Amino acid sequence: MSPIQMKINVAVTGLNATDNPGPGIPVIRCLKADKGLDVRIIGLSYETMEPGIYLHDFVDKTYQIPYPSAGKDSLLERIKYIHAVEKIDLIIPNFDAELYSFIRMVDDLKAIGIATFLPTLKQYEDRHKNVLFEYGVKHGIQVPKSKAIFSVDEISGLSREFTYPMVVKGKFYEAYIAYTSEQVHTYYHKLNAKWGLPIIIQQFIQGNEYNVAALGDGEGNTIGAIPMRKLVLTDKGKAWAGVSLEEKGLMDMTRKLIKETKWKSGLELEIMKDQSGQYFLLEINPRFPAWIYFTAGVGQNLPAALARMAMGEKVMPYTDYQVGKMFIRYSMDHICDISEFDKITTLGEL
Image (tube, rainbow, N blue to C red; front, side, top):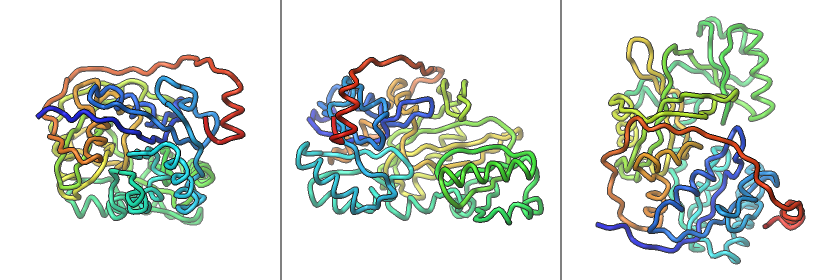
């Protein structure tokens, strides 16, 4: 069955295309790569220096929205205003920290004609880092031992439960390997200042790290999944280059997780394969990763499939992809007029 031709207005967050990029621009590239979609992109930004605001080949118009800390009601009112102007058909949020508010607004958005394709609140909360170990036990998936801590006073007792090195993770983003108690203290304060509590302590697994970008339909079916191994990392641990590969264990874990949880939406799995060949699930990121355009490049356009399902189309699962393909990021200067910066700063839209 041929994909349906459709014209849609899609609002997208995550326009910060920096050395720690958001998934927004890659998601937009995927949507525009689907020849059957006539897409108008409405960018939703939090800060005035997000590069995607000024990339007019990708984003047709941008509106600033309140930070997640402002709460659901403020965000909903802003979305209603934007919708009155732009007639949004679909919103694709791309940041972990904002998903809680958007998930709680699903019914409100539906009532005014805006579609979403998001996990349920239970699905979102069950995979949090501080409960991931229990999540793994429940679903029969190996997860490194972890513990959430809420005070520096708890650090001194960690050596009774964990051996060094141990991994220190932020509530939403960032992770560091600590070899001493002093390093745990340093990373605790750094992550707390940036993301808040709790801080997650996780057992360190020696091995090779893999990532899987996938899409679940909410009924237990995996619409697509692409495993990737990072080849080049930034100093923040983000993939600057990667290669697609064929790894049965990664695919089996992904399909098992999506089937058992009936995951709805995109997600990224971070998985470690230790020296004995065992797989350990390190994280479940509840949205597409910043390298998601790679999935379209190897034959599975997952964001386009999500958009089509959100609009009610029946999408068949992908059955194949190209193995041994590589992506590599590059940076370039984009020239724009300072008047555009002035406009988004003063008016909140561009």
